[in-house]
Image (cartoon, rainbow, N blue to C red; front, side, top):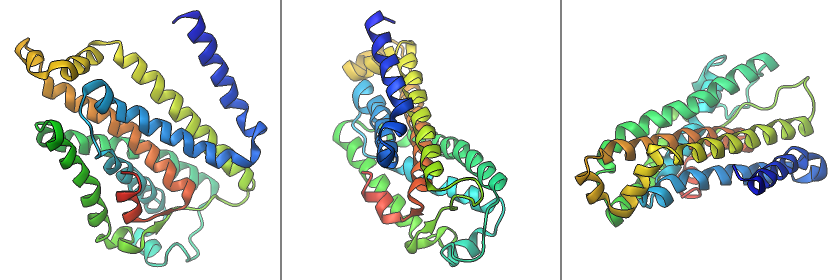
Length: 261
């Protein structure tokens, strides 16, 4: 790493660590900004490095939202009763329950979308150009319609996520907690992708972008690398979705399908 880059990244890291104390009234807004940066970096895997303009990453964002919240609730309470009551019943997570469900939910919020990306990638990534873009645009719309019909996760009325547990600080502590989790996710995504782009994986993605037919003629299994790229994006986008659902406190299928796209 060049010295100038090291100074730049070090300065940004320090600013990120102290930002909650400099701008205490904007912790939540900056956290949302970090989520958007993660979405931008993961979109770049397909749109920038691979040359496949995708509108379907919102599918993985929505899966991460719903799956994380479902794990957090379902580990300790009946999920159907929670969603039926809009979270208004006396379902109260203790601090250990909240954090156990939260971190397990975040992990699975990355793994499950990655598996979905691997499954649907074999069909969708065979398309190219505007055909691929149109197909991925339909993914988010379809996901919203499907989520809106599943009663277990609140159907069209959506679902609430577990509130911050009582007894471990006020809303300021909550906002600081989510701020640093979002900050860590952004840093981890950046470091991983910068490393990946310097490997054979990154070179193959660029070869696909420049001329996919020639890359295949050279013996490169382009489909395999396209799927790996989508899986990587889905993993980080899913975790971002799980975080967003918890920060907002409410998940609504139509907003998930259209706002993020």
